[in-house]
Image (cartoon, rainbow, N blue to C red; front, side, top):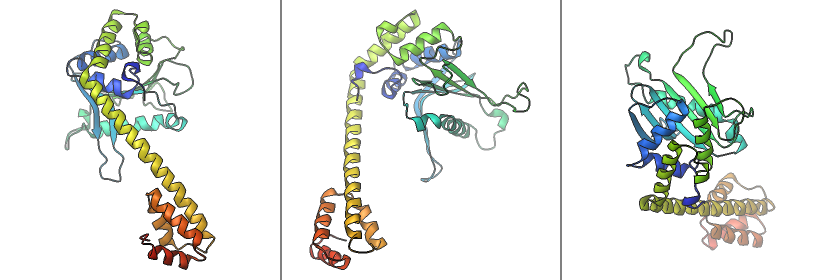
Length: 295
């Protein structure tokens, strides 16, 4: 993982730490949103990493990076994203569709008229070009296919901001902000507003509590990686064992399921050794019981 001082505002942890900060969060969020919308921002409530779980354990939930509620003008979800995985990029429009749906469902009370559904703008700030047209700004609204000019206002809008875009004519303040978000260094400070934002970002990176939170996040991620490597190692051993067992005959489904469910590489190693000494599946399972391998 990057060092905290090397992080940019397109990195999830720094974006979260900035917008959730008790002293600077609202000020920074107000500036960023104002640059995106090119207007003064009204009273703003900031809810970093707003979550809506799935309706049950089998349904997908959502965690929004920066959830902004402007009392008079609607709800804004800002998502810094530097994930260039091709499959994720291709699915981005559907991801946005899901975000809109969860935000809408979470903001319309039972019995309330649909007229009360608030305007929602989802903003993705990406370090990759999501659509390949080289534009810095892509604004997407719903419209009628047969009559594109027909007025159709459902209160939903999505803005994709590509930090390296060259096409179009975005406001200079927005262009400077996006360049700064991708590379959050003093070299990219070119306005008074950005100078203040950089001052805040610098303070955030020096904040002891933020530093401790980042250390904890790094430890958790390292543990997840180690567990993932161990699980991957176990899966490889399980597949090898099943190949060895298949040479002894058709592997019963119950035995196959038990092998695949085992996540301890040491246990799988013992089973592999047992399989190499067995001349049949029956003998393997007998050896297995004799050696207390719990099959």
